[in-house]
Length: 321
Image (cartoon, rainbow, N blue to C red; front, top):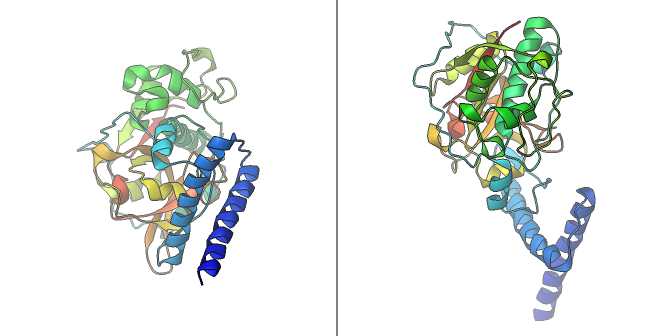
């Protein structure tokens, strides 16, 4: 009996080590011996978290991904907003109509209005990708031209508007920067580096402009629906906890995250909404962690409950065309 148990334990350890090596090969990871066993331990704990979750009854599934050798503390340091951002707007400028609204909206299906998913790398610059994603879409809706815009310009140049480069910022503040700084250059003309640098903005090469910034009233998720249904995708921020880094598919919902404006730590882009067959409403959200994460770089999150504070600070720009 004891021998059998030891053999089983040894097989599990060997199996997890082999899985880790396969994962390393897939994600091009190379470690020295000490780091290998350190990362193996973290990978094993993450995999067990994924397996336990998927064995339960949940509205979403988890999976291994490019973050599976990281603790949440490491993940938070590299990929989330480390500077505290209190993004609340008590009364916003968005004026809602009464509807009715379609049951399903996806701006990716309406035309060439949403750029491909990008990857922020090891930089807490999600706020810049939420900003460019939204401005790319509203400009394309207005002009018919979808042009990838520069996140790096926002990292380098928008710090006077209470943004902090790779340490965080907010889309609403980035829209303000673009409005008052005479535009945003293209990704091609001001390419992404993924670290803080000096500002090289050339107004003569600006490709997109902001007439004004529209904030949606704090916690008014119905107004977010109104904006996405009638107008364009909407930037928002929310509170990411450790479970979210493992998200794979389904409608994300959480009891761990906070739903207040002062706790948001990740900015993304709502490109649509819908509802599951069991009537669970959700947002369709574009992330900035590459196409290998989640649902080809997207995720669904429960709608109508201010899940993880997602309705605390949503906004979008009015394009100047």
